[in-house]
Amino acid sequence: MTSRRGVPSSFVLLPTDVLILGALLLFSLITVIFSKRVTSWEILLIKNIFALVGYITLVYTSQKAPSRFFNFFLRVAAVTLAYAYLFGAVGPLQLIIHDRWLDENIIEFEQKIFGVQPTVWLEQFIAKPLTEWMMFSYVIYIPLYPILCGIIYYMQGKAAMEDYFFTLGLTNILCDIGFIVYPVASPLYHIPHLYRVHLEGWLWTYLGEFIRAHFHFPGGSIPSPHAAAATIMWVMAYRYHKVSFWILTPIILSLYIATFYCRFHYVTDAVVGIVTAVVALLLAPYLYKIMGTTEFMRQSMETSTKGGE
Image (cartoon, rainbow, N blue to C red):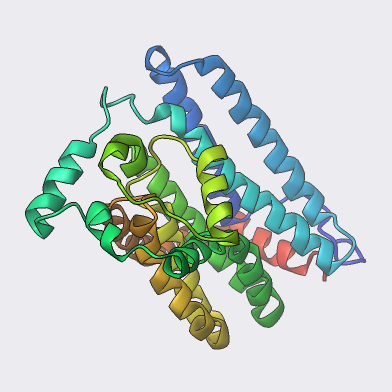
């Protein structure tokens, strides 16, 4: 039901909201069950509860927004911040199954496949212009999240945006679960002593290293969330805005290489990230349909789509 202004008169949840809230509840349950293996588990649980309440508040506020722009802005803020929070919240949970990082297994596997460790072998090609481009491809992915979302929303409508959000969220959550199932610290945390050539560049290299130093942590490596999410963005651009797809093509292809050229990931991480995105793309329509075909979810989609227009 909507008011005369077209703003939802009651709070509704879309499939993306169910996905995010479900992930928060799942990680909170895991935190409690494995509390003896999670450092400061009580604090993590409290943070999850605040994140859950904050997310619901933002979603509610977005649905009450008086204009299409604010409806869009608050919706994007809620979903984007939720995905970023989930990435950080899974950090303390990475070693609850295994009591050590499994980098050695990845290194041994890549040695058998390539005969070298690719992230070290690539040192012979390192150059400032190349490093700058690779860091640009890696960093620009962050603002591309909301930018592509805005293009899809204003060109194709809210249903297309929700398709993008849901598939992207499913991919991110599959990656988060992967961090727990198979924890890998990443190259610069596990084998920093093997690197002899520093990554030097200009602005984008500075930004990339700033993000590495201040926002990254050991783990969050396999599947590569960058490679996975970038694949979803690329596919969604093809689905909803072909011009964006062609513009993104050199950036996304470079980003795949940048994940291991810049030593954020092993090659295996990037490959598994792409595979994870493909799995999410195959699963998303069925999950979305299951949620959307219930009477409650069908009414929710209709109501929310009318809101803010």
